[in-house]
Image (tube, rainbow, N blue to C red; front, side, top):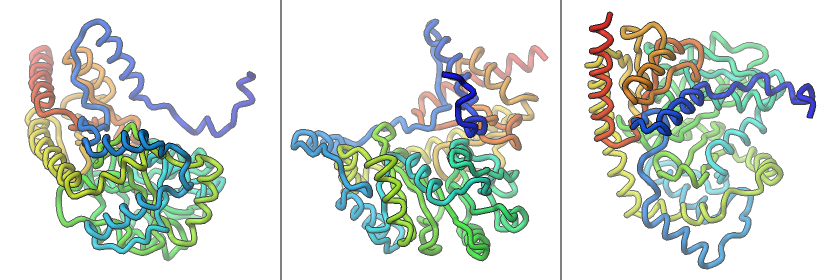
Length: 393
């Protein structure tokens, strides 16, 4: 194939820079090095026994055919009931579209709402795939520098200042990857108001909403039926490889997204859908809450531990399982520091480069989705690493 025939949109979709770090880590492990991985955003917990049993039962009973493009009715009803019991919201099951992970949900939302050359506002730093979904539909992600004073999130004032003639909407994440910070409810309400006033769309990625550690449960769905919300079974529900998520849509948008799903995806895995119904039993939800408490315990350990090493954590992460730490007091370049920590200490962390240029060189992202023992061992290794650097300076 002549590479000149490739679609021009590929030029606007960058690879994960962190994959180069992962390749180096794999080489070290092949050489016999023991590494502690704190880069991957994946729970170390797996699907609860009831969920696995439901999947086994579905296969045994032959429930492996295509489902509706919008998902199993019983799963959509279970998600609706969950919104009622946890958030006090009445979300009609008909507004819920089950997808092949949150990635497919973002794909469908952008396919429905992003036009060629239209702009979508999002914060810098933010999860890189979000801007790449926009680019895939020939839109442009407009990254707005957001520091700790704004919790690394967009504000209503930023929306007012940066909304232009080509702007079509905003894509937010609360809590966020890489920062673990949420948009405060009043600020999110103001953002939605600004976007609504301009006739735009608001997409809110809430895949970490179940892992919020402070305050009462809150969803952007409480701000109006015109807000598009994305969620997933990967994080709170510990089902990463099952590839299952969902969209909550304005009623008028459901048939349009259903049409897209029928053509692009057919449906999410039927086995994963049957299994996911078991996520919402009282016993399984109680287990998820225990695991959530364990994530919070890890957060409460790792943040002061990082600060004792010389990192600065300017905003306490209130959700997800990430810490976004300023390393500028320790090194001039987060990329090089990440490589040095990998090679010398055997600790894998993610530099800020993937998440946008504003914080790229001075921040690292740490995932505490690993055992407390691993976190403690990583801190011990890093303490030795930085002591050696100070002595050598």
